[in-house]
Length: 126
Image (tube, rainbow, N blue to C red; front, side, top):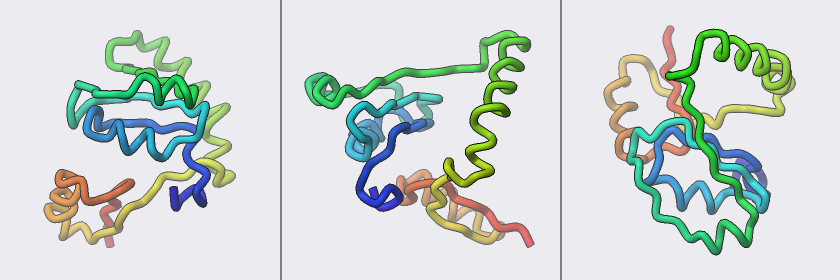
């Protein structure tokens, strides 16, 4: 919510799965979209369908692993044409939770595993 000045996120891409559902929903705007890319933290969801329907939130998932190479190529072309320009313009930005020197990679991973970081952990190489 801080990142969006209290507005909330239009889209949330979740790689963790079940444990983050409530946090994801809490930071989304009405009409927002939640997309599961992976479920590294857990596959089961416990959700309030009434809250989702009241706020018109869409939940979906995507997995590229089992798609044909040609289809992956089409998706990459679409990303280059539609999404990459928005990244270059700063309209889409990753949330960086912390930056640590490469020598602290083990500690940085422990922060991630403990759920103590909101956003990405960047390892700095010098």
